[in-house]
Length: 130
Image 1 (cartoon, one colour):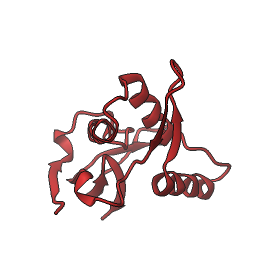
Image 2 (tube, helix red, strand yellow; image 1 turned 30 degrees about the horizontal axis):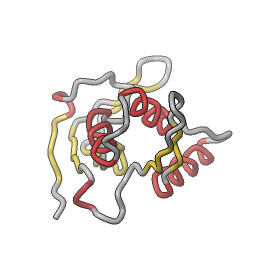
Image 3 (cartoon, one colour; image 1 turned 120 degrees about the horizontal axis):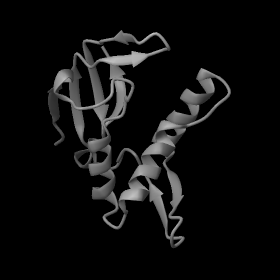
């Protein structure tokens, strides 16, 4: 049975424009594929961070498909391939669930900040906002 960990946003050490909780996502990925190297983890997280698209809708759709379908990652150094899933839909207990309140989010050129009451993360990926 999966439970939710709680964190206050001020306790998380991150830049306020970074939306992914990289420690949670790194830990999940290492648990799924122990043979991944640090550079692999960085590349896989960057693949999620920089999902492309012409419009906001295209980027959201691409991110949705990446989260639902995963992707095939090939390590540059030796060509070893991995099927990467950011969320384990088959065994929920393998995922890391975290509720964070007062999670400061910086955006825009002017240093604007938003602080939602609660954000829900699965494996360090923000999926729901209250």
